Length: 215
Image 1 (cartoon, one colour):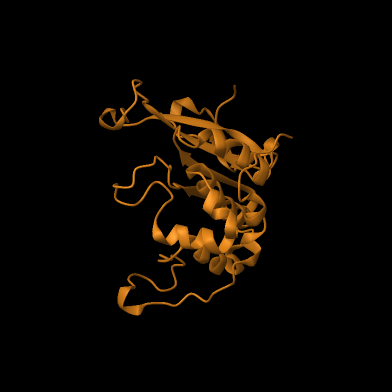
Image 2: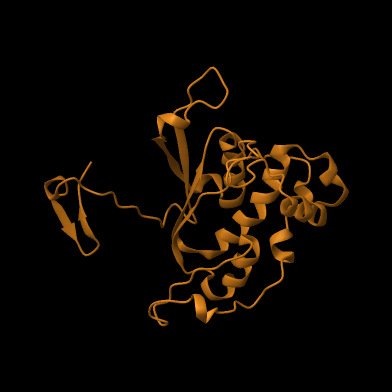
């Protein structure tokens, strides 16, 4: 299977294993609702948060949706979308070492996303599915990376959606109107997805798992 290589890859291949486990601390002043509901809102670095949650939810999550930075290069947006914030530069220096000085914007993004995807895979159930939003800036890099982490046979497909016209032009002569959601399963043979119907008549059959149609 073809694999993607980049500067710093060797340094982050096992970084998710090196991230220490941490205890989550409840802030009662910020809490609301039923304490036994099982719902959590975790504030902090997502890599540290994922490692803290892993002992509780490893192998138990049916559906994951993430919306990672698109790496547009825009440093003046609501957050730095050029993988160039002081926090990410500090992390890259520690995780990658001297090679971090030679990283391109895309190298940095790949170093950032790889250990997070590796941890997320460990959360999925055998029938679990992950959805990853992305646009044209990194979709070409993300796809082989997802193939490597989740396995190419577990790619379920790519969803394409049309974004708002006001954000379609990004300093290029082309109007790039679409973004993507890459969909991968932990095990494609065990995963099942159900679409929404516009009307009950579209799904004439029913079993213990719900209504369906025959194609």
